[in-house]
Image 1 (cartoon, rainbow, N blue to C red):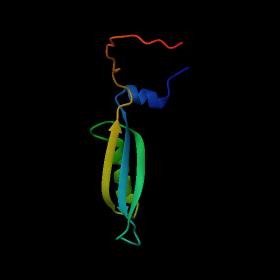
Image 2 (image 1 turned 90 degrees about the horizontal axis):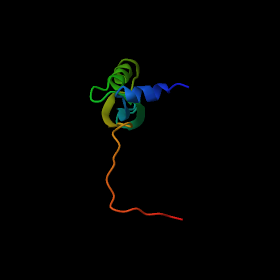
Image 3 (image 1 turned 180 degrees about the vertical axis):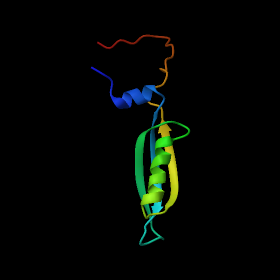
Length: 90
């Protein structure tokens, strides 16, 4: 049994990255369309996102308007705190 490629990426420092890409419609430039992109990427350089945006700019007709990026490390130190009591449920 081996770990999934996604889990290996998380151990290597990758985080789940989501980008909302707003772009102008080629036939109607006054209208903005939204595209959601999600992948494991390295913070803060975001090489996978940059590669995708370069591909978009070279290949697709809809010019980029705005890109909003969010990321979250899925593997991080445990958040533990001491408790003063113990509760038992029967």
